[in-house]
Image 1 (tube, rainbow, N blue to C red):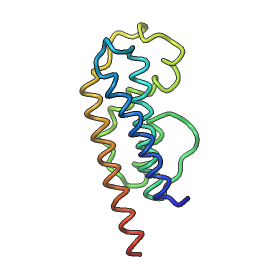
Image 2 (cartoon, one colour; image 1 turned 120 degrees about the horizontal axis):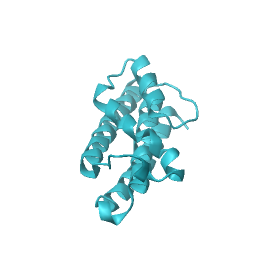
Image 3 (spheres, rainbow, N blue to C red; image 1 turned 30 degrees about the vertical axis):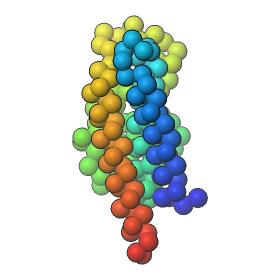
Image 4 (cartoon, rainbow, N blue to C red; image 1 turned 90 degrees about the vertical axis):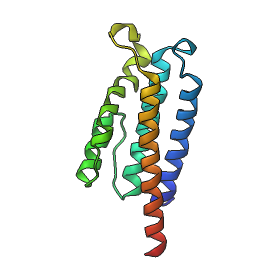
Length: 136
């Protein structure tokens, strides 16, 4: 599988997490730990797709800061997406620990919008890289 195919597959899986988030957008529908897990997964898969599409590599892990640092080192502007690191605890910690241990609940609509912006950005990057590979 080439880089673009791998990136597109990651984006497909990110979209599945986004669709799950849409079903959980109302706070009374499901606990924040579950919504946050899918939000974190959508961001993680989108960032990995971005890295892959531009020829970068990453190691196994779930730390969104690491993926953002890789992108920055590859020359990408990541500032708009830095705040999504708030989702890091949802990758593992809040799968085993109740969120009641923190003071602030997730603002689901705002978070959903930010994740859509990241996803849309990565879709554009992948499309550009795909176009470049066709013309090369």
